[in-house]
Amino acid sequence: MLEPMSPTTVFKCLADDTRARMTLLIAAEGELCVCELTTALEDSQPKISRHLAQLRNCGLLEDRRRGQWVYYRLHPQLPGWAEQMLQLTLQANQAWLAVNSEKL
Image 1 (cartoon, rainbow, N blue to C red):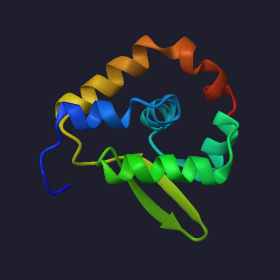
Image 2 (cartoon, one colour; image 1 turned 45 degrees about the vertical axis):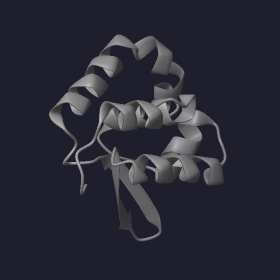
Image 3 (cartoon, rainbow, N blue to C red; image 1 turned 90 degrees about the vertical axis):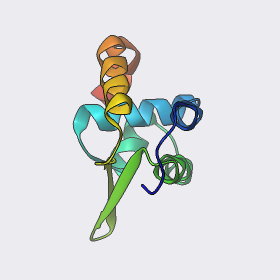
Image 4 (tube, rainbow, N blue to C red; image 1 turned 30 degrees about the vertical axis):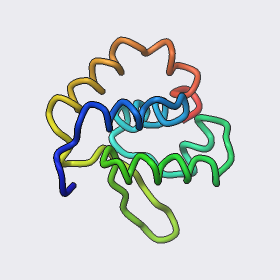
């Protein structure tokens, strides 16, 4: 992460339902692979990968490759305010994510 992350950047990145759900699922689980997210969200791999790339490009997520799998987690240099906002949103919206969480 080269430049400071602004609230505008974070909220624009999370303004899509799929990206918001993926980010909160990753925040809840610590790390998820593309295949787990496609199952949880019942969406195609290309669509999930495209959204993950957007979240990575805006600095919210970091990826790591392990063999043929790519795993995503919250970026370790995420500003404290952004991480707190994600954790608060996660805690307040368990019912909203329940269906997706159960599919993991």
